[in-house]
Length: 216
Ligand SMILES: Cc1cc2nc3c(=O)[nH]c(=O)nc-3n(C[C@H](O)[C@H](O)[C@H](O)COP(=O)(O)O)c2cc1C
Image 1 (cartoon, rainbow, N blue to C red):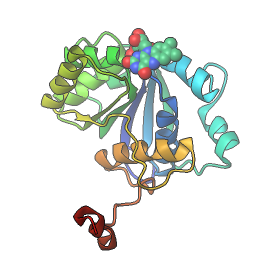
Image 2: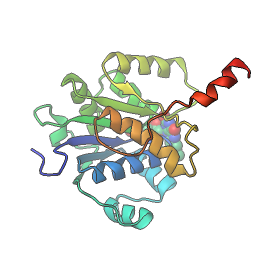
Image 3: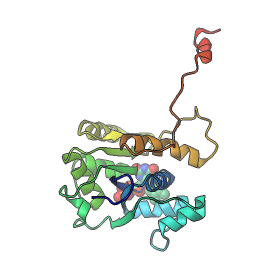
Image 4: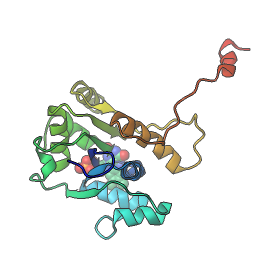
């Protein structure tokens, strides 16, 4: 049972695909929302966090790093860092409760492992458990272009119940920064996990724009 304000507990996995900032922004918003986070970062995920965000989880505390980068962050949720190599961790078992899992960003390697149920590390195992327990699993794949094997793996995980949120931010809200772009994806993921956030403004139709479709 969670002691934090939302009463929610989610698993966040970071793998070695480009776009570590998506994970950072999602983690910030999740902690602010008062969610307990079980974090798992693959070896290449750690490398991408260093290369793209200058965040070294071996030597730096994520909370302090967030404060330094974005000013004091109201952390209402807890963060537990799990080793990706520990298949004996609590989140390796469906007997533990969590409300959903996001793999962000999701490499093609981890996607293929989830698609075939490999469970060779804690990220793959927790994703497998999330699916078998019928809990929400959200994957944010990042690769381009995609080959047929990758496309088929996306279909396989979608058929198994995962939500696929490709790292494809939209530009209609006039993003001003990388953070704005990352927040668009982080917000869509959090909505699927039913975590409250204000990262994405709901689209409001503008009837005055409809004329352009009629060539007026
Ligand atoms: C700098 C760098 C960028 C990478 N970007 C991607 C990427 O965008 N998408 C992807 O699928 N793999 C990417 N890779 C390859 C993965 O990191 C590699 O397949 C790794 O085995 C993934 O393992 P993991 O899923 O356990 O993190 C990248 C690797 C490096 C070093």
